[in-house]
Amino acid sequence: MRELLDDLDRWRNAGKRCVIGRVVGIDGSGPRDPGAAMAVNEDGEVVGSVSGGCVEGAVVAEALEMLREQSAAKVVTFGYSDDEAFAVGLTCGGTIHLFLQELS
Amino acid sequence: MNNVVYPELARRIRANEPTALVVVIDGPHTGATMLVSPDHPALGTLGDDELTRVAARDALGELEAGRTSTRNYGPRGQITPEDLADSPAVRVFIESFAPPPHMMIFGAVDFTSALARVAKVLGYRITVCDARTVFATRRRFPMADDIMVAWPDEAFTKHGASLGASDAVCILTHDPKFDVPAIQGALRSSVGYIGVMGSRKTHAKRLERLVEVGVSPVDLARVMSPIGLDIGARTPEETAISICAEIIARRTGRAAQSLSATTGAIH
Image (tube, each protein chain N blue to C red):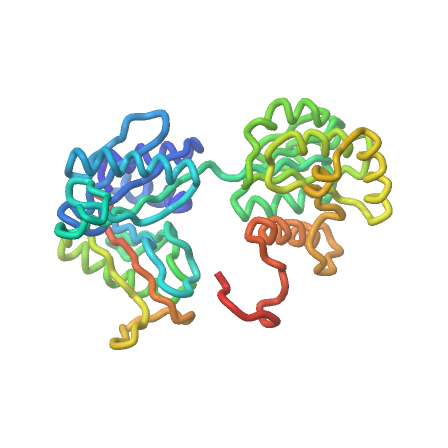
């Protein structure tokens, strides 16, 4: 979060809406610990990261949809489980839980 | 996070004030956020007074330990398994923002500049300390947060009490009249890592001197010298990597082998 502050302030001052995504849980192996954060603004500008680059693209898409739909905050999960293969996974085979919320 | 919590969170993080950001990630008030610090009343609410009170108390504990975690409560902050059995759980994410770790580097030499740069990348707050005015200058160490022209005693009087497990003292002076008091000062603190530069020969002589001045064997075991991991480092930059790698390995308790030569969990 610390490394996002300057950009978040810049976006807020410019009146840009944005979503912050934070890692809140990891099952198995994961490249970043809980607390790792990224932010996406309404123009699609991105700062920070939540994995080794495996899920960032999907987070951007999810965040932009949240801004469009004015969706409530939620947890999204990326990774693999036994029964279902999600569209996006971590190369290390773990599962990552992210909390996405608009910074209002 | 809203217009009240975010600016205060940003302020506390920038001011290096310890603070915990607490957010409901699942439950009746998903997204409700509060900010908890030891010296302030909680800012914001989780939607229920009792839940807010209990989670704020737990967040202070997590912050104290520098931990980030997810906790489950009942909708009114219940924490016993019986209470949680019938009611839908509220999941609360507690993120601790602790002040950055502190690295004190003694000796204003070329290795100091490289070490300060690498440690800065790792998030350390850097203090460079040397008694010689001509060497301990802002121009030579623009990346340092603080430059002290001082003897070790003075530096430890200022910072010693605040050093803890995640902090580091690196002594690069190569000069016994500076090294010995710096090691003694570091040993009187609770700093997690003490490394001292020097060849094996220098180290052997230094050990004799430390024993002479009454440093105990238990204390000597805390001193990493020669400093750094054995990665064949030659340049100041490579040496800085070797020192920082040793600090990480000591903290995590790993043997610092190549992952390709080992098995088991990486993280």
